[in-house]
Length: 304
Ligand code: CP
Ligand code: NVA
Image 1 (spheres, helix red, strand yellow):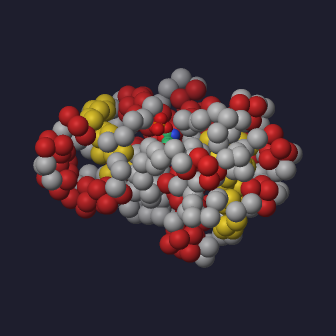
Image 2 (cartoon, helix red, strand yellow):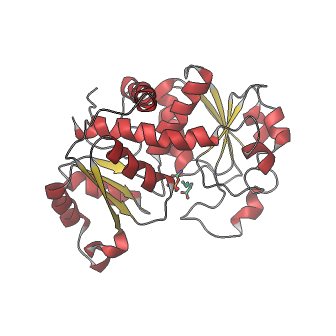
């Protein structure tokens, strides 16, 4: 499959066909891998990874993904780069384009990614910014498709902070005909423009009541109340105890509802141990699927 876009920064760059195509391709790559390994379609290709923030899953799944497809990844903390001494993002983008075949960056300010993408001649992938986390959503929707055998018509209840992951999930919902009900405290709603745009394609409901969101939900999702860029401890008071995903909230969704969390999780804050370690939780499959979706994305963008 060839994508229209060079870069993946939000998810909104994809057409519905491309989004669903990437998910189906990821499911096939996973099967192929489990049956003995993937073809080395990225032989001699290199990914440059830039991290301004900590990461476990994104860092490892991108590096292992490149390796499993026959390529290689270079990992850079932005502190080790000349960026930290004032070299411009534009010059960094041009330089890295002469060495490698793709850049994946985890940053604070989303605009930095846009500048990188504009000046790099190679694909740029958002590995999380303060505003979006598109790679997470590819893995989440792959997991939903695996468990529920479909996407269209599924209802997701997002409980907690209308953050970067939530913003990309709304785009994912709009691209696949998934309905979302989002329960947040007042003032913690997802990005208004993202909601407005996505409402044209699917049902996106905003509420302050977690039980309104969870009604008839097939999927319950939570994420930390304090993202890497939002570490103010006072935030917690706005979320607890009302927005914690616990057994009572899980019971209020459909009987066969699944629980997703991008991880890392703070147990007993946004989710109880009984839920995240319980029978409805699919968080380890979700974490594994970061690997398969990243491989699909890398192979598609780099070979374009
Ligand atoms: N879900 C996710 O992006 O995890 P990391 O922060 O560990 O990469
Ligand atoms: N919303 C979280 C996601 C971490 C993967 C953050 O930005 O820290």
